[in-house]
Image (cartoon, rainbow, N blue to C red; front, top):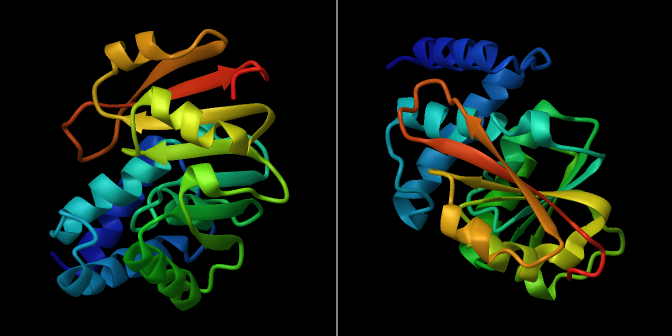
Length: 213
């Protein structure tokens, strides 16, 4: 597939998601997955290899959670190769993002990617979620295939400001995980339709009482 085909796939997918990007951002997103494919040969950052699959399974999947973000400070917990944080940061240049991961090879790649792409609204932090103590808390805490919902709110719960939203990107709705959430956590499951992706996707939106840490 040519670069023009990939761009057309991305533009069409964004239109179906009702995501409007600033001029030039589509190409920067494609530059990002080109970097990811290059580093993947040595660092094994993702099991997704084909560029067309990266557009749907990485870029469009990440952008599908965009309507659920709130506030101007967002943390991506266990960001891996920068997903969903980098696509979201490119789509929202006026918001500030922290991309957090405990694996050095992944934070090295993410740091290289944001420098290469010229992203100025992203900070990379190499640490575990439970050890991170930011100077300012976050309005949105997001994760993609990080852990169970219970572990998510227990390990990253302290990162959310009052009235923060916690967004866990999942495949099938995790009925068992929802039942395991502690009292005081209020969860809603929103199905996601990701263009080009046949697998089930959803985002679990969690709000918690302040006493739930």
